[in-house]
Length: 638
Image (spheres, rainbow, N blue to C red):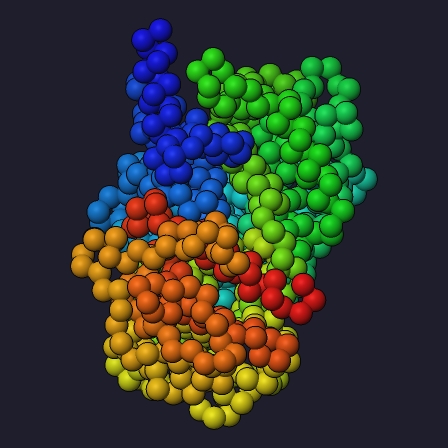
């Protein structure tokens, strides 16, 4: 009894660190299990050698997605701690051997990229760069497809498309390698060309270009069966690649088409009774075949994300929902300690090797089925978190939020020595960025774009929300772009026509206010040239601003943190939205058919929303989501 109680207190303590409540969502319950059974990283198991393994990357990617959705930094910190077992101060990776040319070893690069992009620590960039270098010399088939491993020559496996391409794509997008996107698209094109079965649309697990392997068909080079998890890896690879693949690239359409053919095939083999999928996909009545958890999780994630991001038609939402309901019923169980566990994952399956795996039906059914296999758990985190996003208000469907990049136009050098824009950017994941704000706008169904040119009637026309934040001074950029009368005229008319404008200034030493106020005054708002709410060090209470009950905008964010701000002078039609110590901190104005919201600080950047710095009682993360939802609801066609 004492041991059980001790465990219970530890478990509750783990869960209460951030929100002071037990998790109710399956994704968060599974994350609590992860942080309990693998508290020191899933590879740090007594008596087992520490291996650089893709399994961990799947789990950590699930944890990072939960962090983005919830703003709970425990998930981020778990991922960072886990990777820090491997990444040395000089950027080398413990246990990683590039000369093995194992595509599986590239998978964890996505976690390294996330850690670099959030923390700015160069060691993570150097570690990620090692994996990018591997791809430059990785062995390939004659037409250019990556071998799965050096020890498996001339072979492409479906698994490898997930292990290599999402990292390759995100790296290329982050460090400006436009030539890489052709190569990335070709990997999927080659794989489908060789492995897709014309009759079922399913893809075989592996293809041997040499046709020398015992498992390979002597005419086609293909392995004999459609293994569920291999198809699952492939689908996750498709949707993750598309997230970073350039919108205007000529081969993007080919990837989307491959995904749509894939989705049709996956739907065709979904078990009608349970909603989940079998270990061997096309043989539901085969002797010994069984419903398998990891593949089912992966299909739910791939289809759900594909629909949400517009790559797949809406009809696949029902397929994903049926799959998710099924996997919760079939595979998720709570044990006597209160932990949520995933049952029904096949531990491994491969082709060739020693002992030799012949790819037969009997082989796939001979591997052990286990509880809480990390591949299955990671895929469940991804799938459950994806389905949790359905609970967010979809008020942004068909709407675009445009972020100014003209009046705020600062630059810096990244770890690769490249000059990049920074400060309040959608793609910027470090303290200075708006990546979480943008992520949640997209979760609500909106598109996020940046306007790098001066605003005009033409380039504002298709935007429903326009954000201008922290206009530059001479000290911040070499050639600042100041607000001019023609800009004021274009923006004012756009608002009158129904646009929703968010103005985020700063204190007088950090923003250009004189010319910016020529715009704000059109709506009865003036940013004062002052600095209010100064904060000393980590005395966060100095920046605390409370939201009154029943607030029209901030329904969930009630205790805010704003430091070193400009407060507002108001005239009609502007009205105060939030006061603090006798000053107007936030204001709104209705002008024509449009709406304006103004605040004297860019307070919703990652440093104060991502949970890594502010104590949990501050709710900028929730308030940012409240504000985005409100802005979208003010737009025409709501």
